[in-house]
Amino acid sequence: DQQVKQNSPSLSVQEGRISILNCDYTNSMFDYFLWYKKYPAEGPTFLISISSIKDKNEDGRFTVFLNKSAKHLSLHIVPSQPGDSAVYFCAMGGGNKLTFGTGTQLKVEL
Amino acid sequence: GAVVSQHPSRVICKSGTSVKIECRSLDFQATTMFWYRQFPKQSLMLMATSNEGSKATYEQGVEKDKFLINHASLTLSTLTVTSAHPEDSSFYICSARDPWDTTANYGYTFGSGTRLTVV
Image (tube, rainbow over all chains, first blue to last red; front, top):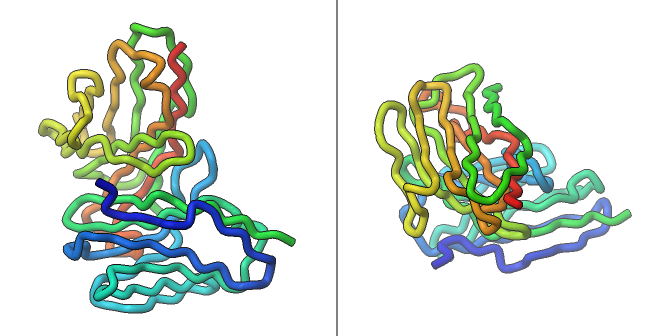
């Protein structure tokens, strides 16, 4: 039973445009939400997070949006750069545990 | 920032042998450490949560006798894959949580992972 789903396994975007990655969840008890970037054979790298009491958080090119009523989380990257190409995972925390989404492979093309 | 060192980065072992993976928090004390497993092109699946000085809590479907976890100190947790078989081949990632870390990552720091290949 996958509690956290990223319905797009892959996404291709042109350099300079906006990348939008989405994440849907079923458990309304999550307290905090994070996005990670991951390369093959490496650990995930933290990007940005948001608390359940907020609906938007921005850090440079990265903005995370949380719609609690829809149980939907999204990450906007603008402008997208070739170095952003990687797999992106959303993760959700409640208590002392993180649950990861299924991942989206982002490819930023020149 | 917080650093978690995971060793080895890759290991090849023969079927039937055991292999140990170490996870160390270098600059903080981690009361809780986590072990994940990632299959190719799939998500990170939590295997178990270990608290210093107590038994690990395993997720449903994870064999605790096969995946032995020890968290003997506040800076070290080990995962031992016992009697390894080819189906245990995977990418294993540890994470440590600093309970006093109030930064944006909620205290979670990840190791760089271990590629286990059982032949």
